[in-house]
Image (tube, one colour):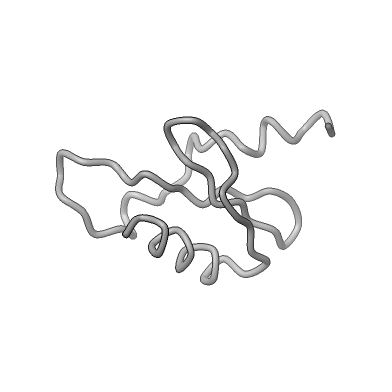
Length: 69
């Protein structure tokens, strides 16, 4: 595994909360994390497992919203 991979998967500093609509006391289950140049991982926040990936940020967000439901 590349030495910087784990650093990129850290969801710290990702501003997903301001773009999602949810109740104030719940947090999203899936987050979009930059995984390289032009790649985004959709990770499960509780476990850190990658559940999917997309090349476009908007498509990655759409997949994260789909997985939430």
